Structures are given as C-alpha cells and as structure tokens.
Image (tube, rainbow, N blue to C red):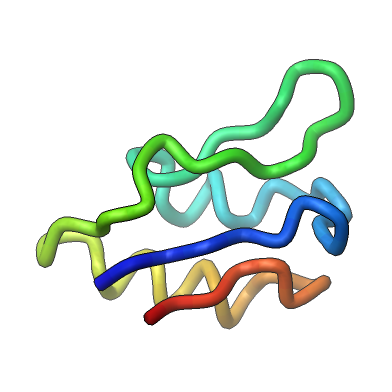
Amino acid sequence: MRVTVDQDVCCGSGMCVLTAPDIFTQRDTDGIVELRTDTVPPSHEDQVREAALLCPSGAITTH
C-alpha cells in the first residue's frame, strides 16, 4: 500500500500521528502532516486506513 497526504488540506489535528505514528509525523512549526514513508508495510496498513478515515480534513489518501 502507498499513502499520500495533501498538506494544503491538512488542518493539523494530529489524528494520523496518534493512529499511525510510524507512518505520520507533524511539522513542529504548524502541525501539518508529513510522511515518514509513503510505502506502508503490511503490518501498518490497517492503522493507515483508520488514520485516513479519522482525518477530519480528508488530507490522507491510500492507494
């Protein structure tokens, strides 16, 4: 699975980091999401799908 984020849409809620901290992080300056990796290991796929569902701004897309 691959994941992308739209930083222009991100509202910085941090739900993604709480749900999948091995995949997502936030910029210190404004809390906008950043990816630690865009290739999700199988062991983290469920967490990333949940993070995408929980994202209030819809900034996370899985492929």
